[in-house]
Length: 154
Image 1 (cartoon, helix red, strand yellow):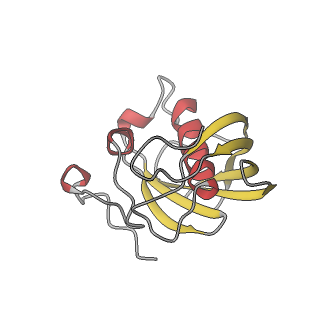
Image 2 (tube, rainbow, N blue to C red):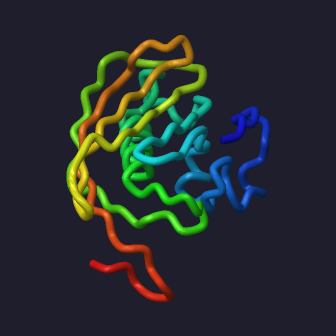
Image 3 (cartoon, rainbow, N blue to C red):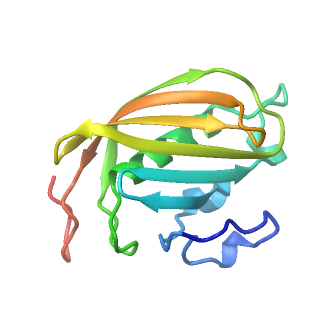
């Protein structure tokens, strides 16, 4: 685990984030960082910027859902070798929006709560910089076998 860089760091030049995972174009676009990634747990952080806000000046619900979905999916797909995370897809994700946020750093935490080898249940939370709860989610994720030179086991 490593410290989260300041928002001033340029993600466009990164090939991997703090956990060693390859930075995807979607991740680069939204700008989150992986803070922790370990067995059944993932924490992401996002420093809010104007493009993350909706027309009323609060964080857009789609940004909230993306953070909760990603934290949950990465928790479900943890692999000790970050260059080979286990592929996952979201089966379902239900979110409760609790409070708005306008600025600061958001932290999303996803956890695997149970399930089997292929389908797991997750829970996730999104908190503001002051620790206040902004949103929660529960989900189901399908895990696939790690690819070995081809497509994952569907």
